[in-house]
Image (cartoon, rainbow, N blue to C red):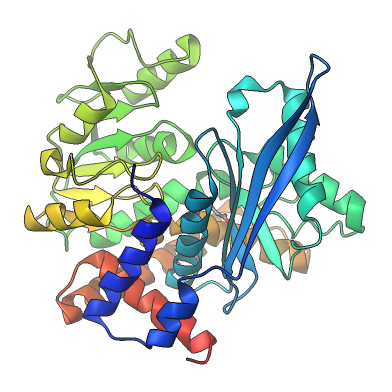
Length: 407
Ligand code: GLU
């Protein structure tokens, strides 16, 4: 499996090849400011004591506090968290929000934990990192397998330990714990605004056939938003398998089936395919909305889409980027496509600091304005540099961060 941090560094070098920036910047930005490993002891329900490995990587804070989610996954390791932290710094710069980049995680399959164990783990993560996080220092949020309920435990633990009950230390909280309207759907919603801003420019038809890889927060909501706008969902997957139907899937029925049975398998009215086969389904837009390293050197030539729209972080390796480019498949990069999540997180932080509560309408008006402006800016940059959207997005982000670093 390719190392995601190496991929992130390779993306930086590739961006430098199309737009020069100081070598010193590249040297400094290639190493995180801080990399913290923690061990979290949890008393399990059976009475045993288990130690979980956790991480926080603070990549760069030139533009504002470190910002980024916490991932709970059995395959999470330091290389993954480092890559995700670097991408967060770029993503916040792309969205032009006053945040730097960080990321956290725990190596755990949370599906194997009881609610009580999950709470102990989440409070334990805060106990070990209380000194390095804070509203003006480092502001965590949800990511893969973490959610508002977990954020509520975390913000409560932080408040108890420090006396700071503003809530601004963590975003993605439940609404009644100081969360923002719209945060739950913001990643997919922001992505949809980016898609609409670029749809015509990327040569996409009015009604698109869309494949969605992933059935988590981003994937499920993306399928709903694209469908509601009149597009056709022709394939969808979860971590175990996928469904396809060129006539269009009944998304609501698929989700109801998954909720009732725990899996996509056995759904009538669609062909069951593998996750690998989903990538090859003929469609206009493929939306990877799960994990990194999904489209790689060994499978990129089978991608059946006109456009890959990255709602996940790091789904396409640099090797795959070259193959897609050669095939004329355009990639809307993660640091633009999924930046709606952290943007609304930043709105949440701002509301907490000012003791305000904005309506969902206000939140989405502001989000749309940012997503459209930055999507078009990146598109124009790609035209000016004669390059792809990823290198263009990196160039814009790097200019902004380098300026903040005085380089
Ligand atoms: N985990 C999300 C991401 O990768 C959101 C981070 C945040 O809201 O801070 O962008």
